[in-house]
Length: 217
Ligand SMILES: C[S@@+](CC[C@H](N)C(=O)[O-])C[C@H]1O[C@@H](n2cnc3c(N)ncnc32)[C@H](O)[C@@H]1O
Image (cartoon, rainbow, N blue to C red; front, side):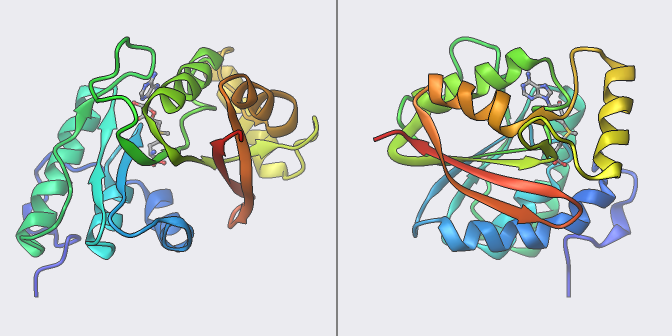
């Protein structure tokens, strides 16, 4: 049987993220709990492409579109996508979009996305990327659509887990504009400015959170 993880083509563009391999199962559970049948799902900052390929493999009832700003990530996503289609010819994973959240306009129609995913980006980018993400979500989500953030957050100014505090320091050392964001003091107020509010805040393994944002009523 062919699987997506078959390493017979080891010398292709696929990138591998051990963390993505670990957290894709819990993230799949969150998506299964919230996606309406036949959803159009756009992933922002897909990185290696392992998450969205796994979701497309396991949820063929939805249509998935990956994206990223970096050419190497787009090549990796394409390579994972090719492997998926070898294993599952009728998969519904679109080719990756070249999309930087700061670009105007985004290369997609307004109100055309039922669910937008953004995992592990907002702390590894300048704060402006979070504002651009929320602005894009507000423009491109359907009225009932939602945005799912995943990653580490501090809560009310407190970064509890030692591992996340160390991670924050390492991010700041790499780029002073990066860092773990505070959910209550930074992320939710910015989302609210864009017309988005938290519908669910879900504890995830390894001191991460999923934050599902919907349009304010
Ligand atoms: C740490 S990786 C996360 C990849 C994947 N989502 C995951 O969780 O494994 C961060 C990703 O954010 C992307 N990224 C950074 N700034 C971006 C921007 N302004 N627009 C779109 N993607 C961006 C990078 O290219 C990179 O692939």
